[in-house]
Length: 190
Image 1 (cartoon, helix red, strand yellow):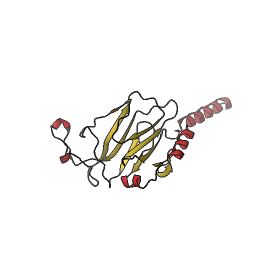
Image 2: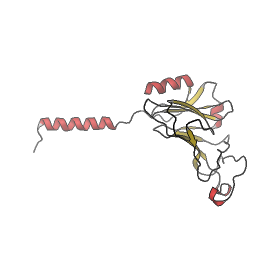
Image 3: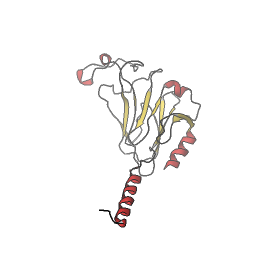
Image 4: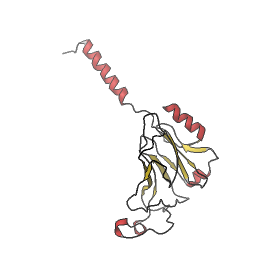
């Protein structure tokens, strides 16, 4: 039996609306990584109105387990530990969570905890973030629909003042852009 035209039209409209509603918007807030005066990574985030960034962090090489006993084992980390550039799994090495900060834009240097945020103690890692290796690859991410940015310290050293590494929306290839260009694109995406 053939469905009457009004019912078929209504079904088609419902499917189309559902499909369009299911399309994901560009990843927001946009994330970019630059370098601070100390040479450490600075994560730049822009959120659209009404969005909250719940956390930011860095993933990188974890130390070999022999050098990284869990805190519950009573062991300790060597002073000045540097993540292994060749061995170990890639895991979270630094993370902070937003507790009360309602801003729309942030510039957060690796290892710092801005007002309104709290450091997260990651299992098996020291309370302070590890020193970064100049040859390792790191991945900056945020806890809200954001495309991660992968980089090395050499990538950041190659940036000119006022430049960051990032990408827009679902694009996965990192690119260098000015901080002003990044801010404009992030704001325009909202």
